[in-house]
Length: 386
Length: 96
Image (cartoon, rainbow over all chains, first blue to last red; front, top):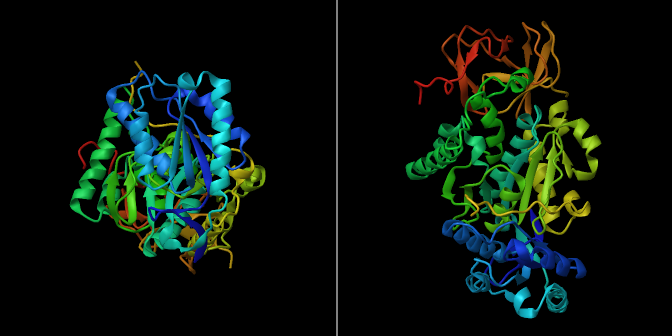
């Protein structure tokens, strides 16, 4: 149960070795993208935040950018700024530097326009990639995996195959001393009391319930009842009987390990084991949150075929739907349709997934990377935009 | 051996059909790495559940090792277990 990973100065292990070009504000996106596009070995992270937002949201942007820059899959970072944004550039740069990696900053208004910034940034990143490319991997174990978990584009097969298979994998990683992060608080609704019962302490259990209540209240404040009408008519026709059952199908990906802690969006866990992170279910926001929290690989269960990936954290796609495996083959890394067929058990499927995770961690390319489907990114903010 | 239905956790008292099953079929039900046989007394569609032991009215329905609802009528072993004989514990405002 080993993989070849990049051990960083701060002890975290990367499964990739990119130079990250992060835009600090939506207005710098074009240049960040252009720079990364011109240098093999660089990837860009862009988003729609950084200005005209509440202080709370700007604080969130600062912290998430630090988290993203600190992710062990990035060897070094170039921050691309416009110059007038609310994002605290220096704070972000210093925050990332705490990991021991090189951080450079470049600004459009100071440098004098996009073309000049693109040129200077490209030259800088070329050198950074040259530096990164001599870094060597070392043999690492399951305990160095920080697994992010997601499910999307669900169908009947998912709760019977793909999500419990991720649960088996998560249990193995936690058992070995690794970290496994469960987000998608939306999906707890209807089974939050069950999730809370899996908490290691009463306090953590209460935090889980508070998280769900907060998300539900936010929706209620704009007239949205997240609990009513669940399961849907379509769910019932498909065999789901109660909201508990539906939610448990999603939560199954967390396996059976006790939940050690609850973290706010994008915050890196300070404990080992299974943890919960506040996040919604939408791909750009949750993949970004998981990356900011330090995930070095993400397992994503999908019944109907979700193609999304992230620029610098590999996303392993698994489906239990044989038709999806065939039709969306370009985007799927693994099939657990054998569980639905009746020819494979859940323990077997989970074991296969762990092996696949280790292959990907050692450098095997995922389908989302190969297809270039790596742009699901954004920072989860409360709003409003002002 | 090809399984016709799956039990997620060994504490569960329902299995989920992996294909359309007919009344009187002897279903091969996977529980972890093992299989057990259950005779169907109803037809049960893919994705739907059936009881794998007699469940008296009022007893908890267990799936994923957790309570997903309560039996509103006696559910004999091999019977279709769904909205006609299971109620959620969450849908009612008076329950925690």
